[in-house]
Length: 116
Image 1 (cartoon, rainbow, N blue to C red):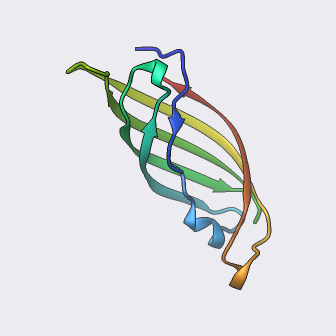
Image 2: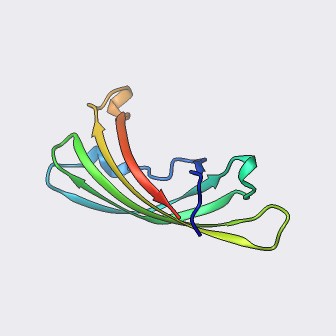
């Protein structure tokens, strides 16, 4: 079922702890889990999201990520639910590490996606 809305991701679904060790030319595969919330006008309850994400590093700072996410949200005041599939493609740029003991690695991400 095609949806004319984009869900609001309540938690960071694609946390990339491997980014700190990312090297040019490497490929990383990672499981994804989180919680998805919707605007009240959509009429869907909060749901659990899971999936798989692949990251290809082109340089030590620049990479591309393809993610597939799946969830099943209950319809408000109903016993029915809606299956939601998401396919996302993002370009990611990591800045140099910073902060106490270089624990923080900020990044910028831009991408496109499809939700069905």
